[in-house]
Image (tube, helix red, strand yellow):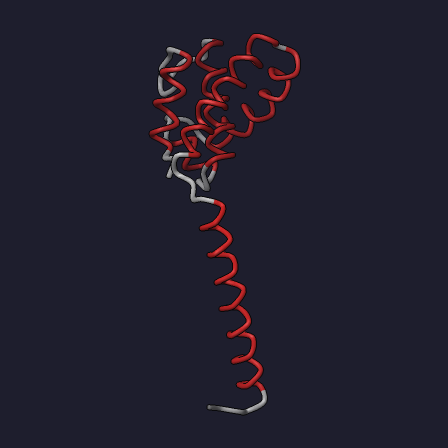
Length: 130
C-alpha cells in the first residue's frame, strides 16, 4: 500500500527538493503540486491529511491542483518530468496490487455474499425464518 511518506520520498528524490520546506520557490511549488496530484490519485487520504503531511493547509492542495493542469498543458519540460514521475510511482504501486485472478475471485465472492444477504433480507421482511 502506497503511503504519503512513500510519495514524499519519491517526489523529493525525483525532483531533488524537499517539498516539506516552507518555500515558494518554483521548483519546490511544482514538485509539491506533483505530490498533491499523486496523493489524490493513488491514496484515499483527504486534502487536509495530504496537505498536513507536507506542512501546508488544504487550500494549498486545491490551488496546486488547479495550477498543475496548466503546467501540464503549457510547460513541456514539467509535463515530461511529471509523466516520468507518474510512471515510476505507478510501477511501484503495481508491486502492491493484487493479481487480476485474485480480484475476480474476490469480486465473485462479494457477488455471492450479496445474493445471500439479499435473500436473507427478503426472508426477514416476509417474516420467514430458518
